[in-house]
Image 1 (tube, rainbow, N blue to C red):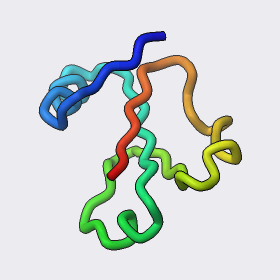
Image 2 (tube, rainbow, N blue to C red):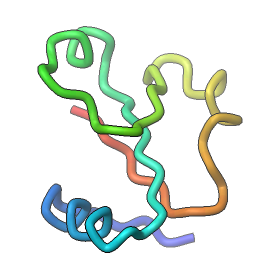
Image 3 (spheres, rainbow, N blue to C red):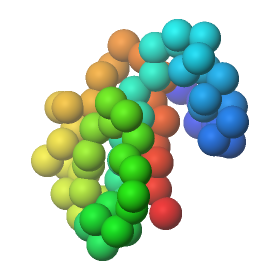
Image 4 (cartoon, rainbow, N blue to C red):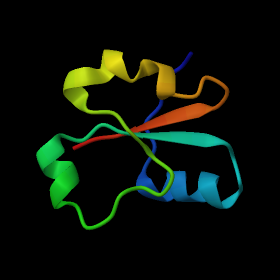
Length: 68
């Protein structure tokens, strides 16, 4: 499966079109806690425990990883 980079605007366009997209928020705990906003509907996957969360990531749609 190809890996592509998306800008925030491109992701917004996909979401606005209703495309099925899973957003994985893999920011560090510190970055996640300091953030004013979390991506709506995102799946929180701590970067130091990805293996423990793999089963939560949908396999039927594009997956966008959000990190810092």
